[in-house]
Image (cartoon, rainbow, N blue to C red; front, side, top):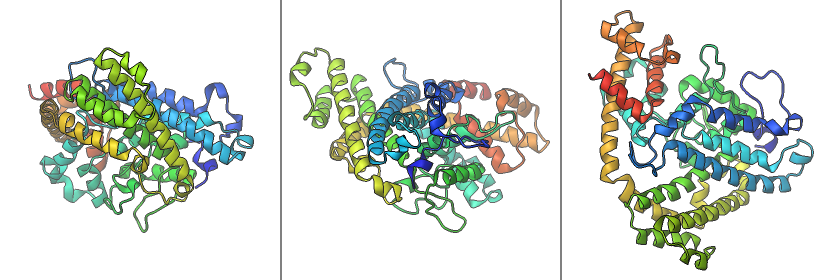
Amino acid sequence: MNWEQLLSLKRQGDTSKRLRAEQDDTRLGFEVDYDRIIFSSAFRSLQDKTQVIPLSKTDFVHTRLTHSLEVSVVGRSIGRLVGKKILEKYPHLQEIHGYHMNDFGAIVAAASLAHDIGNPPFGHSGEKAIGEYFSIGKGQQYKDRLTDKQWQDLIDFEGNANGFSVLSSSRPGIEGSLRLTYAVLGAFMKYPKESLPKKPTKNISDKKYGFFQSDKDFFKEVASELGMISNKTGNDIGFERHPLAFLVEAADDICYTIIDFEDGINLGLVSEDYALEYLIKLVKDTIDTAKYQTLTTKEDRISYLRALAIGNLINDAVKVFIENEEAILKGEFHFALTDKSKYKAQMDDIIKLSVKNIYQSREVIEKELSGYQIINNLLDKFITAYNNNHEGKATNYDKLLLKILPEKHHLEKESLYDRLLHICHFISMLTDGKAVLYNKIVTA
């Protein structure tokens, strides 16, 4: 892979080449991407989607929206620092093509902002609930009418693939959805493969999948334009990651490790003594002890340590990326950057404590159980109504139910796979609160 292609400003439907040297620096294409994402309805819905504590009534706890904004800020910093090093190594990128270090930051920030845009309500349990509706629930009845890969898309419903669809799928009058630059779409693709074969290697990019069968052709177009390296054979589609996807992943890893932990501390799920013990291991080389001792509240002390920890992890991620940049460009680096971090042991300790005290807390489990029931119920009601309507045997109840679908979801889908995916997409775009409300309506 080469950086000239990887930094492509092309957008879906373009008929002429977009050159960086001809860009208006006051309205750079990669920054336009950020704006398009932040003004989208899909992004706004993240304000009422679970990050850690579902349906939390406290105003401190992070939602998917605040998490995504923080990941974008961390991603921008990592991108700029990497961009500075890349331009020093390949000066022609700036001298001939006109790229600046901030371009790297803008690409990573936009992709980071969108990284959770396809996630269903109720956290990761939402993905599992959709998948299990098909694998062990009433959705099993559709298996024999779908291809293996279409079926795998459904039983392993994946927020990353759904996110790619949100960002790029056309609908009547809206070609290419947000029409983001291919560089940002490439950086967004953490798992640039289809749902089968499942986990064919230990390569980090094969851990999950990144696009539905309905989006395969456009996914291949983006990967080809960016010069991404194909790593599958035969009829299977998959690529080595866009290098900047490693930075998006690192920004997410840093934020959920440190900030979810901070949420747990402030909610009283993790004791301050534990928090100090774990965080100080990350900041012992940079902490200003005198300043720290002047902080009188738990929130201020934790906030100070959190900021230092994130700063250290950013610098370390940049170091790991630059040390492995040539292997990454060749498609020969198969790990998350944090896997090679000098702070890996400390991050693993924090995650283990978070799993025990936060992610498996009674409050989280109770709300996830409620989410499971709600999503299964909504899928069953809307899929039944949508299919019955298509087959000309809709009941009056089905017709009434379909009337409460948002206008943009009033689309005819000919294939069963497209209909099932269409309803999954509708459910996935609901906020936690909206899903609760819809469930009350359909069960009234």
